[in-house]
Image (cartoon, rainbow, N blue to C red; front, side, top):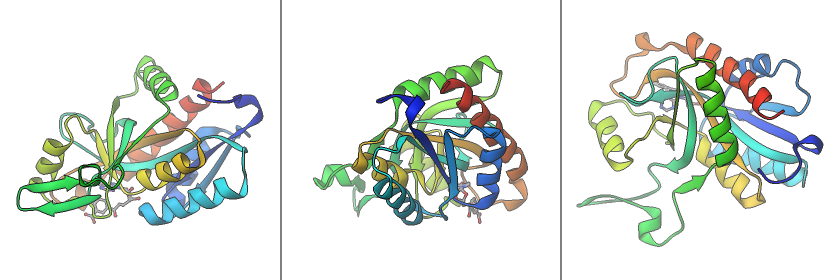
Length: 222
Ligand SMILES: O=C(O)c1cccc(C(=O)CC[C@H]2O[C@@H](n3cnc4c(=O)[nH]cnc43)[C@H](O)[C@@H]2O)c1
């Protein structure tokens, strides 16, 4: 991680207030952190992150996207934590008769953005040491929640090793990239990616896991 953590702050953005409240509980008053609910989806997340970074040059040493997510079968079960190895805008590209072509293959930039690998690795390791179920892998950002087994399978084939999907990470990663601030994504799995079954959601369990992961983050960043 660049810079000295001791003199800067960490911005954590969630989608909704319930996620922000879980993050704040996990931070336990650690004044190095600022947590805000930015709204659902990549645009709301990107606008909020960019506004914060633009109005506070040099103030933040790290920007974190945190919240609940859908977990991919065999990688991230419900109730587990996912630490992103990279952020992928899963539907940023073109549909063709030969399948999806990501924007980088179209020559218009990239649909993948990096994370702070050092912090991501240390956080993953600490969570494992604390016996918290954790997966380290790509996290997708979508504007449409996956609702069928066919789409889940297509995403898992397109992005091997994918751990989770959510709706804000890439927007925040894009703002962090634009302002040269390291990025991290922490997700807690509330549901399985696939056929829509709201009765199977475990949002309470996911928020508890999110709280625990944020508490561990404060330790890792000591
Ligand atoms: O109505 C549904 O079937 C449904 C299924 C899963 C999630 C939703 C949401 O509207 C949640 C959006 C909100 O939570 C994050 N999230 C949680 N699970 C997922 C998911 O499986 N795919 C994408 N996003 C998910 C997301 O980051 C949003 O903030 C509705």
